[in-house]
Length: 189
Image (cartoon, rainbow, N blue to C red):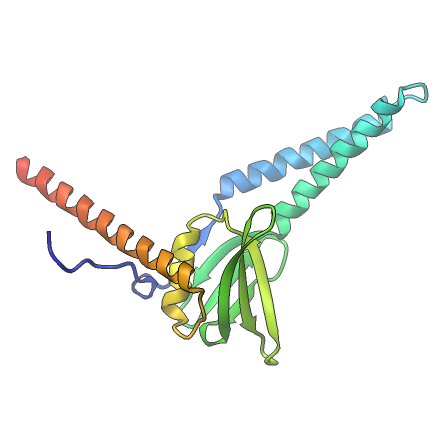
């Protein structure tokens, strides 16, 4: 195996976009909408005055959960796109956020109940803004490595930077290993 490993660099892939699976996103929106519609139907036509209190409360809880699910799917991060000059954060029901690479100050991972990525950047007026998203977004490690690649001035915690370097080398090693196996398979034929 060669001594030089070709590390992951997002600049070689620009423009590139990472997003949630759209079929799953729209299926969940459809299911939540159907649950909400049926709950409203149930409340309007099936609920009787003499029903027990629990039977009167449960439809409102179900309705709340359905509406919350719809709003979360519509307003949460849907896509992350790396362009030649900026990072674009896309949503289904909100305007996209375009952040020029030179305006990104730092990012960090915080833990509340779940883990979140917090991205600090300056807006057009020079005011520092933050964007927070769940760390379970698809390909988040590659997104973090991409931000590190294109915003070279970004401040990153030392442990997080070391972890990203480790993932960078692991990804490069995995790719070189797959290439070597493919080469061996093709030579066997």
